[in-house]
Image (cartoon, rainbow, N blue to C red; front, side, top):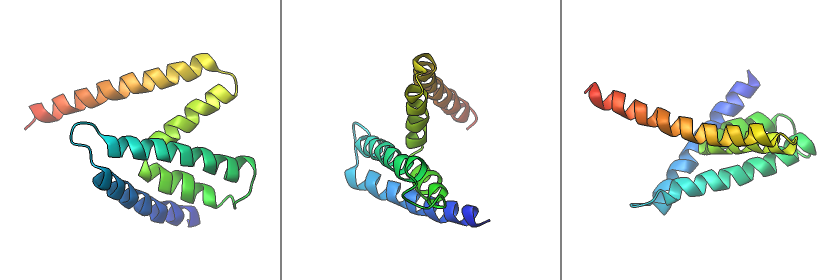
Length: 122
């Protein structure tokens, strides 16, 4: 139960942070704010992974708070980046490439289908 509360609180903070950054940076012709949170969140996910998981410098209770809650709400791209990196780190280049390109292509296609479905129903 404690982890659920930690994730919920951190998720609220992460979502509000994302909203603030995206609106502050903006991006009328290119989504600079979203790109910034995705890149920054991915970097922070790497830092958190090393400090919490690999080195144990922070309490394991911080993992759901920082990695799942805050960074998960700040940017889901950070989780994607970590998973791709873990595949590369273990030497699985083929699966890493398949995951990266497959995710990008499938997610874009899924978004396209979702837009078409939603637009056709209204």
